Length: 287
Image (cartoon, rainbow, N blue to C red; front, side, top):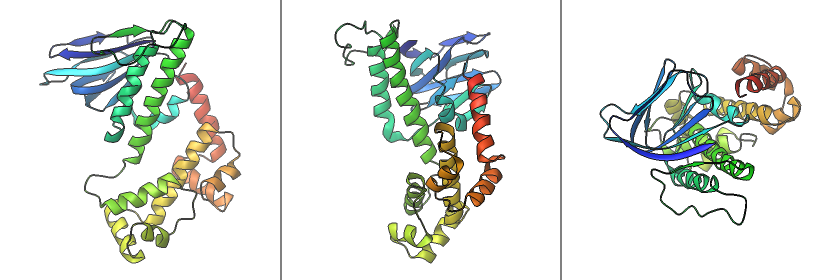
């Protein structure tokens, strides 16, 4: 596992015609970068996490017209569980691009700093502090403890980025009360939400809330709630061994039959087959 922090001027470029034998994670902190993996180009601005899978030709450089590109980068073998979090942000050719919420950038940057420090730990005494300069620094995590600590920091970054990006699903300009209602659905989709209860949470009458939500989101509150419950159920199927009936109940579905039918319509297969297919793909894709 190798970690670095660069701030490169215009003209900087890296070209790997055979790709890399490890996963590449980049987190842009300033300027702009352009990454191309296979036939998929990605422009990376401040706050963007771009992940490139191994074995595919890629190149990256300072973005066109940008004076520089400041970014963290990590080469490592990825943990299998991360595929679940990154899959919604796939662009093709094993390329993933995530733009998380602005509010978590400080925590992500701290995690990268901690990763750089932990990669240098020998296993004796306390790990070094993460308060030193970072730009231009590169570290290789040789020891098992150092590598696992660094991977834990990277796991935190991937989880923070994908979780907050998933929450930011509305276009700018959407009424904040509509956003708040959507966040309530996402935070606890299994709760017995109704149009009346959601309207009360955002201080609107039920009729006004339903009209505003439908107008701005393009679907009714109850339709949006069902989609939130299905997303929640999919995540439970991906990361737990809970039976489908229990997943249905925890996701707010009172009827297992209704849950299975709605899940098949949304994801193309019943819950059990969805879980099996995901795990088969993950075991091969992330080796």
